[in-house]
Length: 315
Ligand SMILES: O=C(O)C(=O)Cc1ccccc1
Image 1 (cartoon, protein in one colour):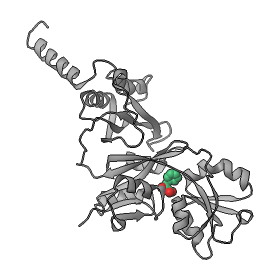
Image 2 (image 1 turned 60 degrees about the vertical axis):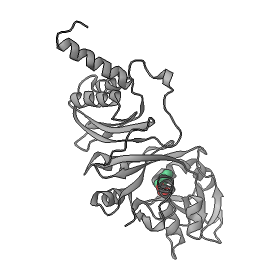
Image 3 (image 1 turned 90 degrees about the vertical axis):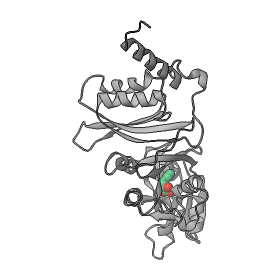
């Protein structure tokens, strides 16, 4: 049977565009739209699909909380791929609607947050409603007796649901991009490519001065560059946080592996979320910027030296 991939649907979401990017050979039958981010995780966990794609973070609005909550809790899934997609928003309505008619606008919460300036300037009296995705908003607007007059969505979604564009480029930043991740069940760690990223969640052992610095130092002293750090509540009461960390490199590399071991020692718990090829704009630190003495060969040489002195040698 051909592989099947779940994504935040319905058809026409930015997440579908990300899936097409990550699995260009997948045909329409292989793409399984889901009603929400949690449903994508559940489909992958249950094994009804081979993998799934969800939004993780946006360059303007930050982390997608439902995705981060699922990554932190529940049966763990591995991130095995990622891609960054530029997000351009347009305002679509049923044919015949003019801008002045628009009183109720529907969209995804992340899209709304990125279009607030345009809405305030152009539709100051309209009410904004959030739904599960931008394409779900477009589909709802197209339905007979729709509860909304217009949707903020991708052009492809507006056209797919038979709407017409009232305005394009309604995002407050024209350069906005969203990072999407590809999820797999455990046991499918991709090999290192030389331009990888590693994601994990660190749960601090106990609240004390310098607890976060202890975690960050594990990366710093081994020359591992961090690309994202976000604190999220664990859900176990006020003041209880975990730290979602993305770092450059692959767990198979000595500097990353040793940093993870260090974090494992200083934390109550660590959830490894995966090592996977970096997508989108390469952010690999140029080799001469990488701190000296942090290559696999440097670590191997130091390990040999330790073995020698433990065996009684003097150097
Ligand atoms: O709603 C969509 O189309 C999505 O894929 C989620 C999303 C929403 C806003 C920006 C980027 C991704």
